[in-house]
Image (cartoon, rainbow, N blue to C red):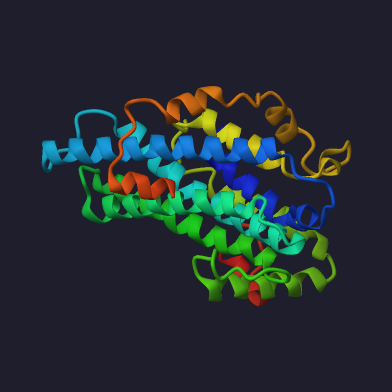
Length: 294
């Protein structure tokens, strides 16, 4: 599964979060475990990729490292774009726990978010220092970062009416501004078209600028499968919005996590302090100026 598909999944999570939060059905623990295991395994791969690149860059000096630039760029893209889903899902998980007065999925989601933020911090250090990156690549990746941050706040705007997002937003004021615009437009005639237009804008925003292949497509798919398994079954009925390509794709993914567990426990895993910390355009302008800037 490509990184851009996880951004689209983040949009689906944001708009359907109320159904998850209000659902009386029990969340499958196996789905929570699959999300956690696949996410932690991906964090481990990211950590090794970033460390390997930094080591090669230090040895090669001002010259780009001799191997792995495409793989490294793909890893950075996954970290930057994957943050959208990680933040949105963590907000949904915490809202669920708060509504049901439990701690079923919030702590798991927070643990993944902490590790993701560590990976983000290390990526930003690479972008600032250069670390063997071609200047054009560094500029392009920074544009990806800015785009992902903005869309994170757009999607978190859907949570503003029922959950405090200050812990998850990149720019709280911006997210609140988007929430105001979304609320106002939904009350206008034709407000039902807001979501399709927004989804179309998101797809267009990430259609270009990313590599053709994501280095951890297998784990991205397992993360998506585990996350979708937490939603109530009625969301996937014959007329449900998520029916079609998403369900067809996810239904082919097995829930077997033994291979990922083996990878997490493999001897090559580092025990360094920083690695351990990782584990703990579409809308109208004018009145809807902020949405129009997407």
